[in-house]
View 1 (spheres, rainbow, N blue to C red):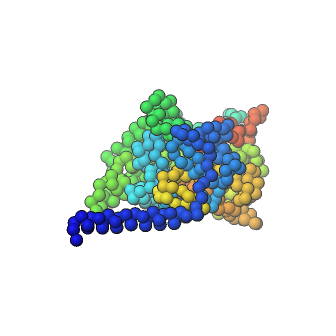
View 2 (spheres, rainbow, N blue to C red):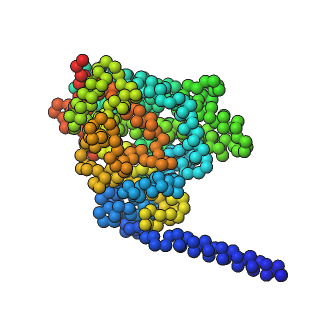
View 3 (tube, rainbow, N blue to C red):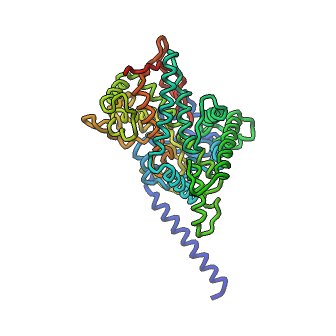
Length: 508
């Protein structure tokens, strides 16, 4: 056979293979429907349909009435699927968690994470999986369970109670946010840096400023994230974000260089020491000869991991504590029942411990209800489909962004009885002696491979801080002032508006 004939046969085989693959793809997607879609215009996509006085999570829930529980829209050139129901959310997060494990690259998150070198916003890859495994190992090495972490949180809870006692003696209305922020931040500083900050410390004040700046500017689907070319024009939010990230990175780098200079295999004071040990261990056991960068162990990765711990462990916890106090003010009967439960199980003298969680089911149920009715992140960080797939009977193409609307899941009337009402009892068993989960649609920290890195830490902090302060104080609206607002400020977390409370010490 001539050489030209052989080449012709080879081309013929290749064409047959391609046709077979296309046929298999068509067969696999046969019968799937296109998602309902909001009206879309060239270049701007569905932006005109998204103009609303409602924040995005509320608007997306309302749009279900017209487009169904799961629908799509265009954000500029990007196709986005909005998931408002549990069955499809379960597919995205759990059943097909790895298929939907991608993350979109945006201008603001790239600035925040040095082009995706963190865990929360980093794209799904072998490096990302190794990186997350490393962090879990480092947290375990540092924490050795939760005993060490519990001691750190209890120390800050004691500090919080002392400050509240002083303010209760001299002030009729107190803004509790700065004190909550300081103690929660000090927990993370203890974990990461083995150091804490006193009131008024300049470095601590810098942390507060950059943290708030990041919350106000990142991952909000701003125009620069939808149309990246806009970054060449003056942008106040982007400029603020870069300033805040620069301040954060200078602090993190300073702490990191100190730890590298003092590193010793037998010394493990905090999370950075644990990460450095894990890095050295991985490099020493690296039989494939891969670089630290390839392993996901570069200095940038470690710095961004510590930045993630700050983001996951500070803003989430502070926000939930502030919402919890608001709902306790609106529902004094709930506050009283928690206090009576603690009085009967612990008394007034012994301070609560993590081991008491099983003995205080009503407090645990209240924390869960706060996380349901005011989810910290009502729109989970967007996922990206890494291959052609489906959601129920709907077709989803590779590269499609998927947003799980946690707000809709937590307010679904098919899953929750009177979801607009604050009712901790919905999380109690029939006789009120234990905590239960009445709906699988409850997932305040997400689920699956992309579950929030700070979930376990946040739950520990919420229990200890709330139990300590409610054992000692009662919160109420200051005389002559309106109660705090229940509408939140949308961002990477759903923050309540500023408010003040009356803090009344409980009698012995």
